[in-house]
Length: 226
Image (cartoon, rainbow, N blue to C red; front, side):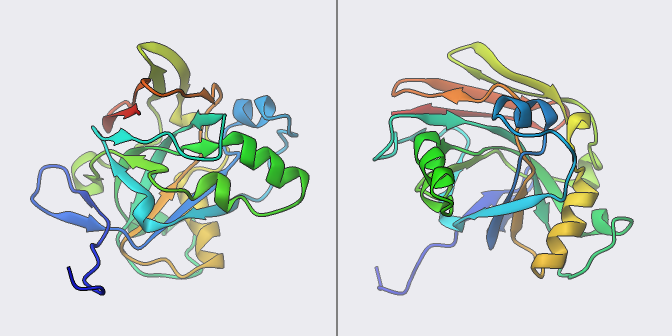
C-alpha cells in the first residue's frame, strides 16, 4: 500500500449501500444526572463540555476489541450518537436538528484509571478516551427514516447482565442544545459524530466479556473484549 493511501474511517448507513465518512468525533461529558452523581460531581446543570476521539477510533458493531494497554480498569459507556450532515457555525437551538443526518448507538470505551490520574493532575483526558478502538458504533440510521428520537430506552449489558438502563429523555442537554453549543466552539461539517453522554451504571470490562447494548427505535450494538 502506498504510504499516503490511507483508509477513510466510515460507518455504514442503514438501508443503503452508503458509508458515512467520519471526519471528527466529539463527545459530551456528564450529560445524565445519575451518571454525574455516580462519578461524584455536583448535578447542577451547567454548560456542556466536550472532548474528542480520533476518527480512526471507530469500531463497527460485531467487532472484537482488544483490551487496551496500560490500564487495569477499562469501562463501558453506552451512548446516543448523532451524525452531522450539514456545515455550520453558531447554530441556533431551533435550527439544530436541520444539521442532523442520522443517529446511531455507540460505546465510549474509557481507561478509567488513566482518566482518574489525569483529573488528579489537571491534565487532558486523551489517553483515557482517545485510544485505539475506543469508539464502537452501530450503523447510522437516517433522520429521514426514523425522525429525531427524544425518548426511548438506552441500555447496555455485559455477558447478558444489564448494567446501564435509562431513557433518552434523561439527557441534561438534549440533542438540539448539544449541537448548538458545540457549533459555537467548532464549525460543524458533514462527517462529524457527536457522542451525547452516558447514563449511570458504567463499570469495568474484562477480556472475554460480551457487550451488548441498544437504543429503542434506533439499533443495537455488540462487541467482544479480547
